[in-house]
Image (cartoon, rainbow, N blue to C red; front, top):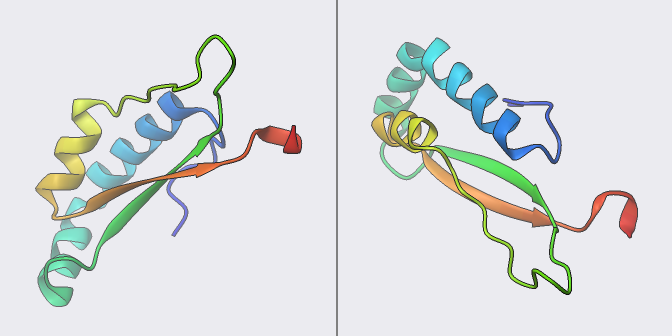
Length: 87
């Protein structure tokens, strides 16, 4: 299920995901009880942003997202993709 259309914009993706998790908390909690632990995952897509000046970029997930997902038993995965446009 698509939670955010904010491709490559981590802060916007996180805001969208928090809104989604809060809006659907009841249904997600029921789903978690039905499936059991370890079956729910929020996949956050990130674009490659390394450069010569910053060869190891860092990414921060806000507390609100981690708390909302964790409170529902949802793991968070970070998936890294190449730069936009295949640069």
